[in-house]
Image 1 (cartoon, helix red, strand yellow):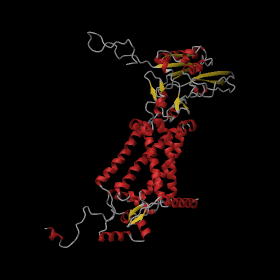
Image 2: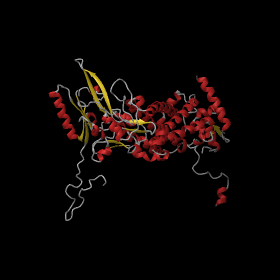
Image 3: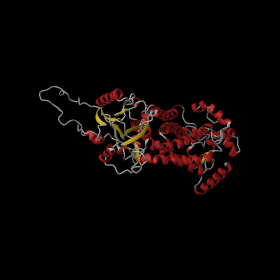
Image 4: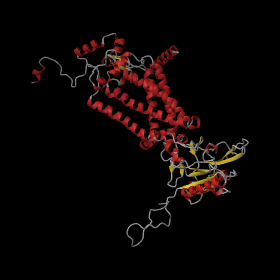
Length: 307
Length: 248
C-alpha cells in the first residue's frame, strides 16, 4: 500500500463495487534520453551522479583526451566516453556518449543472476541491484551486453547505475538530468522520449546533413530505458564501443530456464530409479545366498522330541 | 613419470598404514588400504560440500534452503570454489593411487555389454574375468576424472569471471560446469546405492578395508583368484556344500 498515491480513493459511501479508477494507476515506463549531438562533454552528469549517490572519491586518469577514466567503476556509474572520429573529408568530429546502465527491457544481468532477489526490474523499466541479496558471483557481468555491472572486491558486491530509482520513486528526475546544462539529457516516459528522439533525428537528417542520424533503442533486447540520439546510428560502435546488436548469451535463456530444471528432475529420477530397482529387482548378495530363515539344526530325532 | 607416481603412492600407502588400521576378520580379505579409504572419504566430504553449496546457485528457486547451511548466499558462493578445489585435489591423488587398477581391459568391454543382465538381476555372480574393479566402477571412475577436469577448468573461469575471461567464456563454462554436476549427481546415486543396500557387504570395504571371501568371489572373481590362488567357482561351490553363508 505504501507505494500507492496517498489520495487515491479506496471506498465511496453508498457505492457498490470498487470506486471508479481503483487499481488503475498508470505505470508509465520511464526513459532517459541522451542526445549525443548536444553533449558538450562538461561532465556535470558525472559529478552529479557521484554526489547524489554519495560515492567515495575515485582517482581519474589522464590519457591526452577529455575522458575522465577508461571505463566505469563500481563507484563511478556515469562516464562520458570521449571519441575523436575522423570523417571521410578529413575533418574531426567529437563523439561524446554518456556511458551508464541501459536499463534493458530484457536485462541480461537479471537473466544471468542466480541470487534470490539480487536484481529487480520495476514496472517502470528501472533495473536495480539489491546489494544485500547479491552473492558476488559476477554472473551479471557475463550477462550484460554493455559491460556495466562492476564488482567491488572489498564488499564482494556488484554495483551499477540505478537510474536514481530513489529520486524517480519520489517523482524527481535522475541526478544527471538535473545537472545537465545543455538539455542534452531528458527524462520522461518512454513514449515521450522516443517521440522527441525521433523528431530530433529527423531534424538532424533534414536540416543538418547527418543523413544517418537516428535513435539507439536496440530491439534485440526488447529496447532500453536509456536511449540515444546519434549522428550516425549505423555505426554506434564509434561512440566508445556502443554495441550495435546487444545479445544475452543463449545459455542464460535455453540452459537456465529450460534445461536446468528438466535435467535436475532427471537427476532426481535417478534416485527414484535406484529405489525402484531395490523394490523390483532387489539387492545382489554374495553367493551362496544366505537362506531367508535360519535352518533348524539337522539332528536326527528332533521332530520326534518336539511332537 | 609413472615410476615417480608409483613411488609417491607407495610411500603414502605405507605412511597411512602406520597411522590407521585395517580390521580384517577370519574369512575376510583386505580390499582397500588406509590411504585409499582416507582419500575416498575426503573426496566424498568435499564432493558433498561442493554439491550442497552449489545447489543454491544451480536452482535458487528450488534449493535456496541449502544456502543458510553455509552461512548464507555470499558465504556459500565464497566457499563453493574452495570445496571444489578440495574435491579436485583429493580426487587427483586418488586418480594417481588408482590409475593402475582402473586401466580399461577387454573384460570391461564385455562387462559393459552384459550390463542389462547385471541390472536386471539375472546374474547372481559377476563374470569370472572381473578383476579388482569391474567395468561399471571403471566407467564411474573415468567419468569423475573427466568431470573433475571440466570442473577445474570451467570452475576457474567462473571463479575469475567475465572480467578476466570474457562473458562468452563464462556463459559456456557455466553450462559445462552444470552438465558435469548433473552427471556426477546421477552417478553418486548409483554409487551409494550399490555400495550400501544394492550389494550388501560392500560398505565395510571403505570402513574397515575388508570384505568377506564370499563377497570377493561373487563380485570380483578374478581378483579373488589373484589374492587367494583358489578358483572362485569352486570356492563358492564348496561354501554351498558346507553351508557356510558368510555373505552378510
